[in-house]
Length: 99
Image (cartoon, rainbow, N blue to C red):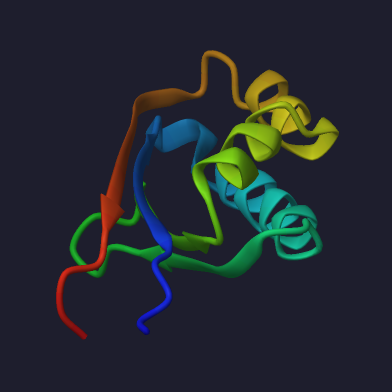
């Protein structure tokens, strides 16, 4: 039987003057996320055409794990550290159909 995971694709667009700060915070939150129970993957990408834009590919074992992640100290710190520095923060939660 195929194991079902929840995938998150997050699109984060930093204000140009805050790009490096946001990137640093994304790296930090990724380190904490990878250590969380239920985290399978956390992969940070930057857009080749827009250096202010980042995408995070995450896989989690369950919606409960994602909910716990949203309340984790490192995620709350990320939100606080990037407050006012983002133009966009969009999260899509998806379920894999075919691999």
